[in-house]
Length: 118
Image 1: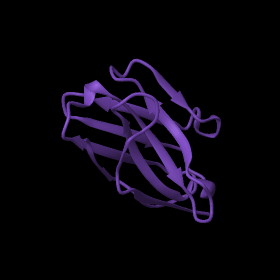
Image 2: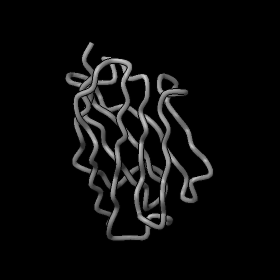
Image 3: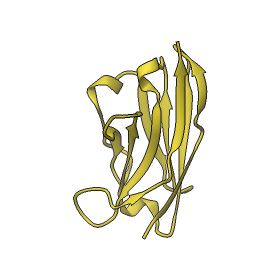
């Protein structure tokens, strides 16, 4: 089992930036893929981005391409999400997730709130 703790959320104006971090413990992070998801009020949770074990492969949801960047530091067991050009529609709780046992994500953090004001 992997324990994940997100940080870095907050309130920002539209057009601004935030950097989210996710600290993993319990297993060596280089053993599993990781991703970010988000859930806005009244909406289903949606995929944001994912990164491979080594960090050399990334994938983004279309609406985040060019604005968000996912990176990882396996030496520190952390994954980050740099979010630029934020929009009010980006307001959501952002979750870090790990895929430790094959397809799908089986470990989740508690989430961090991101609020973008217009």
